[in-house]
Length: 244
Ligand code: ATP
Image: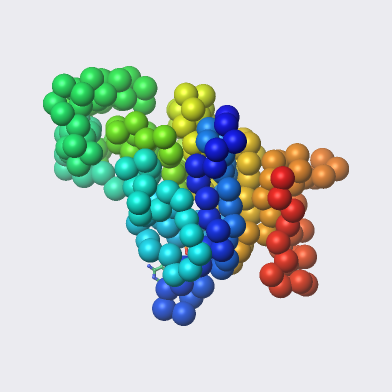
């Protein structure tokens, strides 16, 4: 991991029709880090990832990579966004063409990613007929076809069974070990606990961020630490926790 910051939000603000989805968010993620953003439904996780990916224009503050760096980012959205009536192969070919990969490169990457995601034997099945876990792996494979240095994963294992979840995490760890900077949004504390850097997001605000050890003094579990921060936040509105 290097010290170069690869994902950054400074005083980031985003609202939707009067709803403040992100409220002066500050985050810095160095190159090669695996960062987990945890928060309840509606905390602002998707909005944060979409601003970082350049899919939303921020109302205030700044964000990296943002709109100028869209090609550097692989974005794996929440839910299943592949074409259900196309096969696994055809989905990969489609996304490869969107990224402008030539035929030879696409064929090589496709073989490599099918192997990586353990989908080779399913390559001719319709994507809509895959299990939930396989669909998530296909989404992940398509999001890294252009070999982005930054990967954003929006609740990638929601609704996925525990075995597939473990398998999915193996893939995240392979990408992390290869040097990809990863930001993963999740509502699962046990999932973000595996990250080097954890951000507590609540009602569009960063309550705290740091390593799991920093966030859980005295061996408290991460969920309790989060709830404590929420209680402090309710007493002192706008209070932001320590940074590393
Ligand atoms: P979830 O896990 O339920 O997806 P989240 O943490 O990803 O939640 P966001 O989807 O970012 O949260 O939503 C943050 C807030 O912004 C919520 O109050 C949501 O209703 C609102 N919001 C998000 N997108 C839009 C939109 N396109 N139009 C209006 N409101 C929106």
